Amino acid sequence: MRTGNRIRRAAVVLMAAAMAAASGACAPQKAEEPAVTEAAEIKAAAADKTDGETPDETGQAAEQETQTGGGTQEILVAAAASLQYVMEDAVQPAFEKECPDVKLKFTFDSSGKLQAQIEEGADADVFFSAAMKQMKALEEENLIDTDSVVGLLENKIALIVPKGSEAGITSFEDITKAEKIAVGDPQSVPVGQYAKECFESLGMWEEVQAKASFGTNVTEVLSWVAAGSADAGIVYLTDATTSDQFDKVEVIGFAPEGSVTKVIYPVGIVSGSGKKEAAARFLEYLQTEEALAAFAEYGFSANAQ
Image 1 (cartoon, rainbow, N blue to C red):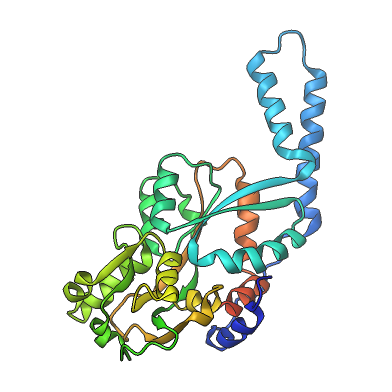
Image 2 (cartoon, rainbow, N blue to C red):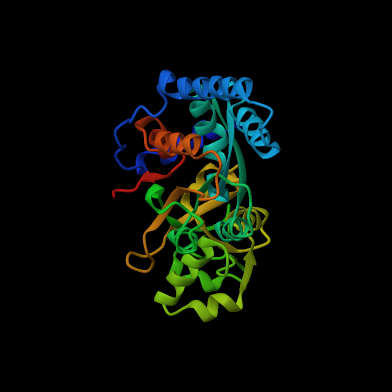
């Protein structure tokens, strides 16, 4: 666990919503028996093959046996950058302990970039977005299994300044006192899209845009503010309170009520995944009380659906 995470998580745990009920996603017998049975069937079928067996059939059987790997599979989770700390520090070790036959591998970036990678055929099994926009776009392209999508978490849009800032910025409304404002690129970064929506609602977007430096993801925005190369920035609450740079920034406030849509993090299974059973078990685990409690410790709250 990263140094200081326990302290900073304690500071935000009170913001979490009530946790959903546990669902028992990974009972050992349920997880292990199908894989073992399937492997045995493949081997038996291979032994019974006659001389008329085609090369394609042989290759398919071998590929299927390799995928079972003695009952262990690895799934690739394409997740928003703001999920990196909680996924690596808390969710992954807990899930792999609960479901030892499924291993997790991650790729973290802005949701827009991950969307583009999936559209280009990236070998991802699960998509965990920081906004509904990217998830819906993939659903419309039949690249996400619609019936698997869950609007799992909620986050908040926060205004941050460097620790000890003397710029006199005390709210979203006076952010233009800053000479340089760090914002995620609204074209591809959800937190930037939320920021634009907020400032358009406040009638300030043109002023903000004129002073804005656009980051490729929320981590970059946070880093600019932490380093003092930007006088203010818009990030998720979870980034400001749980990143390795949390002690270098100060949270000034949250987006004014009614100025921005609810910040929902949906998760779903990629349609092209060859490991949908394992991916479904991971999604089921994410909805358990244990997983939601971990997210809460990092500043997220369960989305009331």
